[in-house]
Image (cartoon, rainbow, N blue to C red; front, side, top):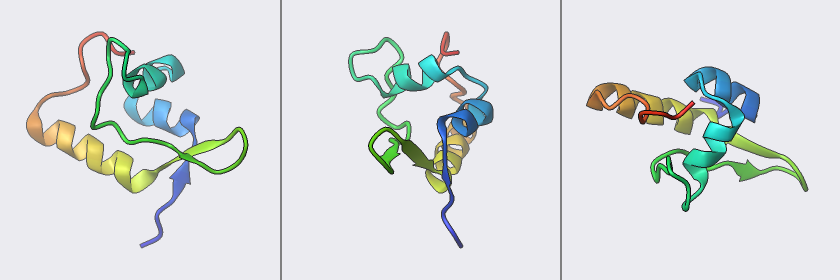
Length: 74
């Protein structure tokens, strides 16, 4: 199976959160940091993409644990 690489817009739509929330979940010093949230991969000087399979696995884990998104993340 091909592992599709997706952009920030796709990530925002998939999780129904804003761009700033995505980056807040990636920021180790941020209020909503999530060490399990998939990290983007650089694909150019100013471009990053996420592996769709990693996003799907993260979402499945959230749903199976019943954790949902962290409160306040948007």
